Length: 136
Image 1 (tube, helix red, strand yellow):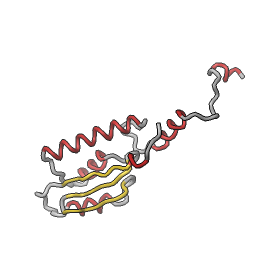
Image 2 (cartoon, helix red, strand yellow):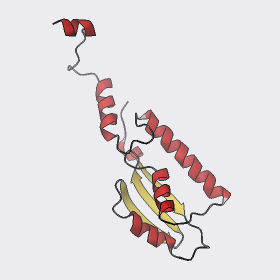
Image 3 (cartoon, one colour):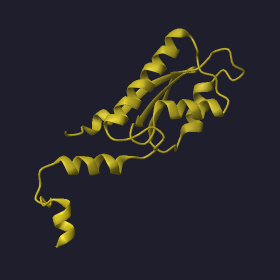
Image 4 (cartoon, rainbow, N blue to C red):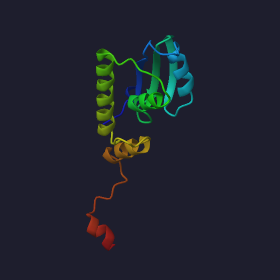
């Protein structure tokens, strides 16, 4: 299984509630997320919309949303946006699990490359059974 690095870069939109004392929540959130590990790019097309580009192996949308929620930002909780976030959370969690990156483990890049190395054909494998290796 060859991992395409471009599939591990995700681009998502986070929509904020327009009925908030800070009418420019997206700008404030971009400042709060700047320099966060795994976040590659932040764009603010409108005052209530933030576009985030991030590395899936280092951070997920769920982590970003939890960080924003903990800092007092209010996301748009209309049905469409809630369903979209839930679908992204599920898809990202499944993709990370398939890559060997369990939930709650923030950086699993090394595990992905180790498992890829183990599956590849190369001459560094000892084909003897385990009990023979310990015997010699």
